[in-house]
Image (cartoon, rainbow, N blue to C red; front, side):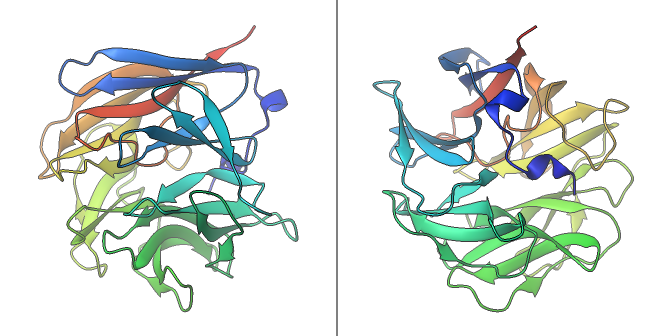
Length: 293
């Protein structure tokens, strides 16, 4: 797994972060705010009122009416990366936080209103990506014995369940709204491509077949569309998803088939690491970047 999962500090990246939305039909882009420091990975709340993003190890709530940000109290979890997911009822948030003891990423859960986190995965590194629609299970990418695979675990912690074991990097596992499937991305075919499997790990099926490197499939709330970020072949190694690249956000049917480019932008890592569909499945939130020379 590439080390860019570690939270990046503003002073390390001389960029302007641009928080945007895009209409999936008209492709119209709307700039909500610009920041003179790094922000990443917006989640859209189900009440259509806020976006949750990470910056400099912390989480923030961005009000879509006032266009103002407020820090969320995350207790001792102050090194959160861009892997954060809201519970289906939006009362809690799960995060990947790099513990002070060893700097490794572990998964924690705390109230979205703020409060002390609870440790879910004692074993590290673990990188969160999904929360089952029934609220009971988290899905994540984890390195165990030198191999990155997809795992699930109860939201209360306990014993983890390994779902993939094929050589290659598997990452980005996210539940479909019906709970029957987990979407993920994998290098097992050579390039990074989008895959889908049953929630128990069976029926692993490749869903994209192009000559690009495709990362982080996100399922729309209505279950009809998949959005993902694409790096051009040759720009990156299949197992890397760095920042500051020319990339695309693409969408496709959840049944598979031809994809279409929704946005071309300068970004990559931090742009759309987590699900950022609007509740009505009509828009996506994302972050683009502009380098300060």
